[in-house]
Image (cartoon, rainbow, N blue to C red):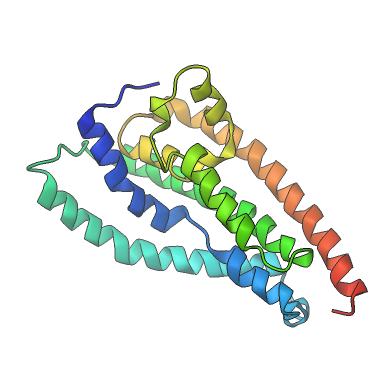
Length: 216
């Protein structure tokens, strides 16, 4: 793992709100409440799936965040460069950053979708949403850069899907990871996407059967 200086740490945490605005998903609360309130029937009559509806909401929200957040961050970066040494940003680092943002977004989306589907069985998914926040706080690089972890904890954390949401985009943007890391990162991303996609399909099917059996 790359060593972090004090300046690196300041830049890392400075980037966190930007990355969260592009990767953090909030659909579980809204969709979970709709399922709990019996409003799912409205979605089932539409020609597209509930998951697709949720995805369009999430994408629209992130596009709006991208348009409004990026200019503000660029202005702030220009302002703070005199006191904080911000890493040089190149077209390559921007491209890798956007790829990492995409991976973090889709993994978090499926994870949040699974939490929303738990509303078929529980009264309120809030406790699961809170648990998710704790998971990302510890395992996702929100509380600290994963570079701070000793071996072999660092490698274990990097095998989990949660670091895609905060740590990985940050590492690419800061130049801590490069193009040579992209292949393994994409490969692991595909594995977790298959796992999460299969799991959300299973939870959805089981929940829908329960919903229909109860007269939904």
